[in-house]
Image 1 (cartoon, rainbow, N blue to C red):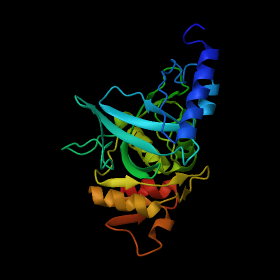
Image 2: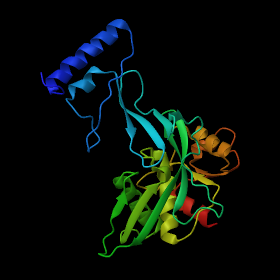
Image 3: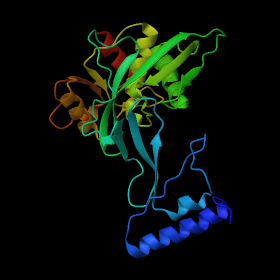
Image 4: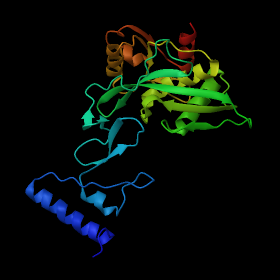
Length: 270
Protein backbone atom coordinates (compact mmCIF):
# COMPACT_ATOMS: atom_id res chain seq x y z
CA UNK A 1 0.00 0.00 0.00
CA UNK A 2 1.00 3.65 -0.31
CA UNK A 3 3.23 4.72 2.63
CA UNK A 4 1.45 6.75 5.29
CA UNK A 5 -2.13 5.78 4.50
CA UNK A 6 -4.54 5.42 7.45
CA UNK A 7 -4.91 1.67 6.94
CA UNK A 8 -1.15 1.16 6.89
CA UNK A 9 -0.71 3.24 10.05
CA UNK A 10 -3.40 1.22 11.85
CA UNK A 11 -1.91 -2.15 10.87
CA UNK A 12 1.69 -1.13 11.59
CA UNK A 13 0.74 0.46 14.91
CA UNK A 14 -1.20 -2.62 15.98
CA UNK A 15 1.63 -5.00 15.08
CA UNK A 16 4.25 -2.87 16.83
CA UNK A 17 2.27 -2.51 20.08
CA UNK A 18 1.39 -6.23 20.07
CA UNK A 19 5.08 -7.10 19.67
CA UNK A 20 6.11 -4.64 22.42
CA UNK A 21 3.63 -6.09 24.93
CA UNK A 22 4.58 -9.67 24.10
CA UNK A 23 8.32 -9.03 24.38
CA UNK A 24 8.20 -6.61 27.33
CA UNK A 25 10.22 -3.99 25.45
CA UNK A 26 9.27 -0.28 25.73
CA UNK A 27 8.07 1.16 22.44
CA UNK A 28 7.98 4.82 21.41
CA UNK A 29 5.92 5.93 18.41
CA UNK A 30 6.92 9.41 17.25
CA UNK A 31 4.33 11.54 15.46
CA UNK A 32 3.87 15.12 14.39
CA UNK A 33 0.99 17.40 15.34
CA UNK A 34 -1.41 19.45 13.26
CA UNK A 35 -1.85 23.21 13.42
CA UNK A 36 -4.66 22.61 15.92
CA UNK A 37 -2.25 20.82 18.26
CA UNK A 38 -3.65 17.31 17.78
CA UNK A 39 -1.70 14.25 16.68
CA UNK A 40 -1.83 13.78 12.92
CA UNK A 41 -3.19 10.53 11.56
CA UNK A 42 -6.00 8.17 12.55
CA UNK A 43 -7.23 8.43 16.13
CA UNK A 44 -6.97 4.66 16.56
CA UNK A 45 -3.19 5.00 17.01
CA UNK A 46 -3.78 6.91 20.27
CA UNK A 47 -6.07 4.12 21.48
CA UNK A 48 -3.37 1.50 20.91
CA UNK A 49 -0.76 3.08 23.18
CA UNK A 50 -0.68 3.46 26.97
CA UNK A 51 0.58 7.04 27.11
CA UNK A 52 0.43 10.07 24.82
CA UNK A 53 3.06 12.75 25.47
CA UNK A 54 3.56 16.07 23.73
CA UNK A 55 5.73 19.15 24.08
CA UNK A 56 4.10 22.49 24.77
CA UNK A 57 5.10 25.02 22.12
CA UNK A 58 7.55 27.60 23.45
CA UNK A 59 9.61 30.30 21.75
CA UNK A 60 12.28 30.08 24.47
CA UNK A 61 14.65 27.23 25.34
CA UNK A 62 12.11 25.88 27.85
CA UNK A 63 10.28 22.69 26.89
CA UNK A 64 7.28 21.43 28.89
CA UNK A 65 6.38 17.78 28.40
CA UNK A 66 2.71 17.05 29.10
CA UNK A 67 0.50 13.99 28.93
CA UNK A 68 -2.94 13.87 27.34
CA UNK A 69 -3.39 10.14 28.09
CA UNK A 70 -1.80 7.93 30.73
CA UNK A 71 -3.08 4.46 31.62
CA UNK A 72 -0.36 4.09 34.25
CA UNK A 73 -0.94 7.26 36.27
CA UNK A 74 -2.05 10.87 36.31
CA UNK A 75 -2.17 13.06 33.21
CA UNK A 76 -1.35 16.08 35.39
CA UNK A 77 2.36 15.26 35.62
CA UNK A 78 4.69 17.56 33.69
CA UNK A 79 8.35 17.35 32.70
CA UNK A 80 10.46 20.50 32.47
CA UNK A 81 13.50 20.60 30.21
CA UNK A 82 15.87 23.05 28.55
CA UNK A 83 16.90 22.71 24.93
CA UNK A 84 20.63 23.25 24.51
CA UNK A 85 23.43 22.42 22.13
CA UNK A 86 23.55 18.85 23.46
CA UNK A 87 19.79 18.34 23.39
CA UNK A 88 17.21 18.27 26.18
CA UNK A 89 18.39 18.47 29.79
CA UNK A 90 16.00 18.12 32.76
CA UNK A 91 15.49 21.05 35.14
CA UNK A 92 16.19 19.65 38.60
CA UNK A 93 14.66 22.45 40.73
CA UNK A 94 11.99 24.31 38.75
CA UNK A 95 10.15 25.94 41.71
CA UNK A 96 11.17 29.52 40.88
CA UNK A 97 11.75 28.97 37.17
CA UNK A 98 8.81 31.11 36.05
CA UNK A 99 9.53 34.13 38.26
CA UNK A 100 10.85 37.37 36.81
CA UNK A 101 13.69 38.67 39.01
CA UNK A 102 13.89 42.47 39.08
CA UNK A 103 16.15 44.76 41.09
CA UNK A 104 13.50 47.48 41.47
CA UNK A 105 10.67 45.21 42.57
CA UNK A 106 7.63 44.02 40.62
CA UNK A 107 5.78 46.42 38.29
CA UNK A 108 2.11 47.27 38.50
CA UNK A 109 -0.15 44.40 37.50
CA UNK A 110 2.17 41.63 38.68
CA UNK A 111 1.43 38.98 41.35
CA UNK A 112 3.03 35.66 42.28
CA UNK A 113 1.01 32.44 42.61
CA UNK A 114 2.06 29.02 43.91
CA UNK A 115 0.46 26.53 41.53
CA UNK A 116 0.30 22.74 41.62
CA UNK A 117 1.43 21.06 38.39
CA UNK A 118 1.41 17.27 38.57
CA UNK A 119 3.45 16.54 41.71
CA UNK A 120 5.35 19.84 41.58
CA UNK A 121 4.77 23.21 43.20
CA UNK A 122 5.74 26.02 40.82
CA UNK A 123 5.91 29.73 41.57
CA UNK A 124 4.63 31.74 38.63
CA UNK A 125 4.23 35.42 37.95
CA UNK A 126 0.81 36.46 36.68
CA UNK A 127 0.86 39.71 34.72
CA UNK A 128 -2.20 41.85 34.06
CA UNK A 129 -2.84 45.05 32.12
CA UNK A 130 -6.08 47.03 31.93
CA UNK A 131 -6.86 49.86 29.51
CA UNK A 132 -10.14 51.69 28.86
CA UNK A 133 -12.16 49.98 26.15
CA UNK A 134 -12.71 52.08 23.02
CA UNK A 135 -16.23 50.77 22.55
CA UNK A 136 -17.23 50.97 26.20
CA UNK A 137 -17.56 47.19 26.49
CA UNK A 138 -14.45 45.48 27.79
CA UNK A 139 -12.79 42.48 26.19
CA UNK A 140 -10.42 39.89 27.64
CA UNK A 141 -7.21 38.75 25.98
CA UNK A 142 -5.65 35.77 27.72
CA UNK A 143 -4.16 32.58 26.29
CA UNK A 144 -2.29 31.28 29.37
CA UNK A 145 -5.26 31.43 31.74
CA UNK A 146 -8.75 30.58 30.53
CA UNK A 147 -10.56 33.75 29.47
CA UNK A 148 -13.77 32.63 31.20
CA UNK A 149 -11.88 32.41 34.50
CA UNK A 150 -10.39 35.89 34.02
CA UNK A 151 -13.88 37.22 33.26
CA UNK A 152 -15.29 35.60 36.41
CA UNK A 153 -12.56 37.03 38.67
CA UNK A 154 -13.02 40.48 37.10
CA UNK A 155 -16.77 40.27 37.79
CA UNK A 156 -16.13 39.30 41.42
CA UNK A 157 -13.79 42.29 41.83
CA UNK A 158 -16.42 44.63 40.41
CA UNK A 159 -19.27 43.21 42.48
CA UNK A 160 -17.55 42.67 45.83
CA UNK A 161 -14.64 45.13 45.78
CA UNK A 162 -16.22 48.03 43.89
CA UNK A 163 -13.49 47.94 41.24
CA UNK A 164 -14.85 48.98 37.84
CA UNK A 165 -13.72 46.34 35.33
CA UNK A 166 -16.53 46.00 32.77
CA UNK A 167 -15.42 49.03 30.75
CA UNK A 168 -11.80 47.83 30.54
CA UNK A 169 -9.90 45.74 28.03
CA UNK A 170 -8.04 43.17 30.14
CA UNK A 171 -4.79 41.51 29.09
CA UNK A 172 -3.42 38.60 31.13
CA UNK A 173 -0.13 36.76 30.70
CA UNK A 174 1.97 34.26 32.65
CA UNK A 175 5.73 34.83 32.70
CA UNK A 176 7.60 31.99 31.04
CA UNK A 177 4.63 30.88 28.95
CA UNK A 178 3.18 28.31 31.37
CA UNK A 179 -0.53 27.58 30.95
CA UNK A 180 -2.35 27.62 34.29
CA UNK A 181 -5.53 25.71 35.11
CA UNK A 182 -5.00 25.41 38.89
CA UNK A 183 -7.77 27.16 40.87
CA UNK A 184 -5.18 28.03 43.52
CA UNK A 185 -3.93 30.83 41.26
CA UNK A 186 -7.22 32.76 41.39
CA UNK A 187 -6.31 34.95 44.37
CA UNK A 188 -3.04 35.98 42.70
CA UNK A 189 -4.96 36.69 39.48
CA UNK A 190 -7.38 38.91 41.39
CA UNK A 191 -4.49 40.81 43.00
CA UNK A 192 -2.75 41.24 39.63
CA UNK A 193 -5.96 42.69 38.15
CA UNK A 194 -6.39 44.99 41.14
CA UNK A 195 -2.77 46.14 40.87
CA UNK A 196 -3.15 46.88 37.16
CA UNK A 197 -6.48 48.70 37.58
CA UNK A 198 -5.42 50.77 40.60
CA UNK A 199 -1.84 51.42 39.34
CA UNK A 200 -0.43 50.16 42.66
CA UNK A 201 2.46 47.67 42.65
CA UNK A 202 2.27 44.72 45.05
CA UNK A 203 5.06 43.81 47.52
CA UNK A 204 7.88 41.95 45.82
CA UNK A 205 8.07 39.21 48.48
CA UNK A 206 4.38 38.32 48.41
CA UNK A 207 2.76 35.12 47.14
CA UNK A 208 -1.00 34.50 47.06
CA UNK A 209 -2.81 31.15 47.16
CA UNK A 210 -6.53 30.50 47.10
CA UNK A 211 -9.66 29.86 45.05
CA UNK A 212 -12.23 32.64 44.74
CA UNK A 213 -15.96 31.94 44.90
CA UNK A 214 -18.68 34.01 43.23
CA UNK A 215 -19.45 35.45 46.66
CA UNK A 216 -15.93 36.85 46.87
CA UNK A 217 -14.76 34.30 49.45
CA UNK A 218 -11.22 32.90 49.37
CA UNK A 219 -11.39 29.12 49.67
CA UNK A 220 -8.67 26.55 50.43
CA UNK A 221 -7.05 24.48 47.71
CA UNK A 222 -5.09 21.20 47.88
CA UNK A 223 -1.48 21.16 49.14
CA UNK A 224 -1.68 24.56 50.84
CA UNK A 225 1.18 23.91 53.25
CA UNK A 226 3.43 22.57 50.48
CA UNK A 227 2.77 25.66 48.39
CA UNK A 228 3.64 27.98 51.26
CA UNK A 229 6.78 26.02 52.16
CA UNK A 230 7.99 26.11 48.55
CA UNK A 231 7.46 29.87 48.41
CA UNK A 232 9.27 30.32 51.73
CA UNK A 233 12.21 28.20 50.53
CA UNK A 234 12.44 30.37 47.40
CA UNK A 235 12.70 33.56 49.46
CA UNK A 236 9.12 34.83 49.34
CA UNK A 237 8.24 35.54 52.96
CA UNK A 238 4.81 37.17 52.83
CA UNK A 239 1.82 34.89 52.25
CA UNK A 240 -1.83 35.55 51.51
CA UNK A 241 -3.76 32.31 51.99
CA UNK A 242 -7.13 31.03 53.28
CA UNK A 243 -7.57 30.07 56.93
CA UNK A 244 -6.95 26.34 56.34
CA UNK A 245 -3.25 27.05 55.74
CA UNK A 246 -2.85 28.40 59.29
CA UNK A 247 -4.40 25.47 61.17
CA UNK A 248 -1.29 23.51 62.15
CA UNK A 249 1.41 25.64 63.69
CA UNK A 250 0.85 28.87 61.80
CA UNK A 251 2.54 30.30 58.73
CA UNK A 252 6.28 30.36 58.20
CA UNK A 253 7.32 33.99 57.79
CA UNK A 254 4.74 36.77 57.44
CA UNK A 255 1.55 34.88 56.76
CA UNK A 256 -1.84 36.54 56.60
CA UNK A 257 -5.18 34.75 56.64
CA UNK A 258 -7.45 35.99 53.86
CA UNK A 259 -11.18 35.28 54.07
CA UNK A 260 -12.40 37.32 51.11
CA UNK A 261 -11.31 39.44 48.17
CA UNK A 262 -11.99 42.54 50.27
CA UNK A 263 -9.63 41.22 52.96
CA UNK A 264 -6.91 40.74 50.34
CA UNK A 265 -7.24 44.24 48.91
CA UNK A 266 -7.36 45.80 52.38
CA UNK A 267 -4.19 43.91 53.35
CA UNK A 268 -2.40 45.11 50.22
CA UNK A 269 -3.39 48.73 50.87
CA UNK A 270 -2.47 48.65 54.57
